[in-house]
Length: 456
Image (cartoon, rainbow, N blue to C red; front, side):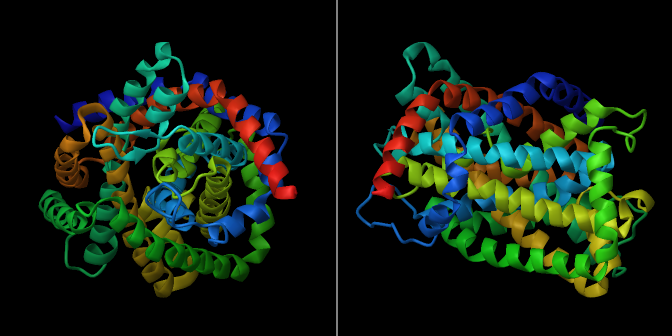
């Protein structure tokens, strides 16, 4: 049965991530970049000041501050997409896929500025009367009624896209292979269904202690763990790169050359390189997917543009910094050519080759923390979609379903897990990008007013 599910999921994923989605995500992001006249990028310093709380006010509407909002959003993006996802991109799409991940990050800066500004600008109340943000509320509050079906469309696929398939799967994999198999506590040759099931149940129980506390508890945990783990991960990667600095120019050259030739992929499939790079880039920074708007829409502020500026820091941190660090480690070590490993195990192998046992320990700690915080944050995303579709008083049913799915994700194959999420993300991008494109003039108008006030 699992083989049939994997076959169908992979087939649907290949259709969903066709060239049309390149036009929507990259073309839409490029439009936002030009339409904004690079204004958001010119105010990076102001975005950092906002992040540090210089403009926070306890009287503003919302649930969490700017730093907690970005930490929660980064908890959803800095994780398996940056560690296991990069490894998958290199194995399937070749080194050139990393270049296209960088492209998604550059245009993603502008995309996040627009989508997350809109998430605050067009907040709406759920069935319990609480103020909420996200693509479904942007569509309902900002667009004419004929577009409102897109809100339900996003929420339906958001229920699936928020499931912890990739995170729980890869966390189970690294614990099994790095901790248990390498220490001889588990045989590499025997079946691992029993271990996966047991670990999935344990992960489910631990996640419940945070998830059932709602967004405030999730944001509190994320704001403490994510910054520390990101610094630890980047520091370890920087040490490894500096120790092998003579190889870095060759690695960058390989990435750029392969991005336009596809020679590292069987048959020189250039389209495969581009598609998979954009696919994994979208999964990494979530720009244009809509999930990021759910976290940033809960921020405590009266100025939508402020949160748009804070949100645009996300692609810079998670893709241009963390993803690049992972890619450099894998390519410098040569593990991508000599290992049969895939996903997070390949990244762990690269860390071990370059930094020895300390590197393996660091990657293990980071994966456990990143995967856990992503699982916590995604539960909030799915809960928001469930509240919109079925009412806030029924959202607890989704939380229990979400927790149960952690066990299922620990059992299924990696390809099945990633295909399920890829299909949902592709569908979620449609209403998110269309609503942002239609409402882009509103954002530019608000930005013009805000920046004029700021200058004066």
